[in-house]
Image (cartoon, rainbow, N blue to C red; front, side, top):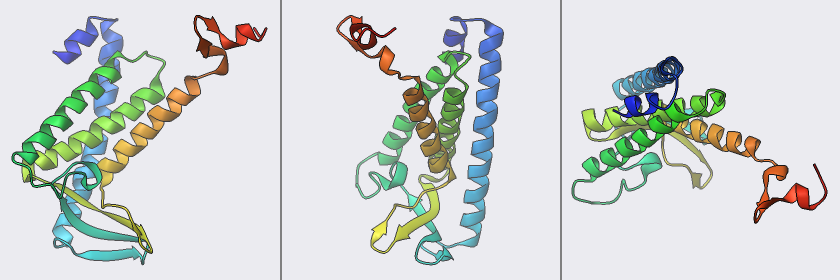
Length: 190
């Protein structure tokens, strides 16, 4: 339904090609994410930690029942797993719509959205299959400790970073307006 609605807005071949590229990149992210989670879950027991770079980076098996980076994992809410899954699916729908309706020239935007899509689906697969997300990348320094995360979370963060960089790239001082008059026009610029 979502793909159909977007396809009605522009040339169908272009949207179909963009959708295929988006899905292809997302599938690669999902595959890598699920493979790494499978390997870690097979080799480690819950809570086990293996130093990769001692006192900085470890592989530590964690079951995250909350959202990204452990948000809500400590909360004891009824239907928490269902709630977190539904929020993820709604966000996924918004990302998919935005990706398919973006202009053909917005390749970096679509690449970032494909990373977000693949990462979100990778974590949704865990939630549906296991009731939690497997996290294992454990980064810390002295007393500073980042919550454990996984490849899907990394893909989401890189995707969001690309979207931010792309939006900053498109902002220009000449495009800034005060009221209805561009700022550069007030200064006598062209």
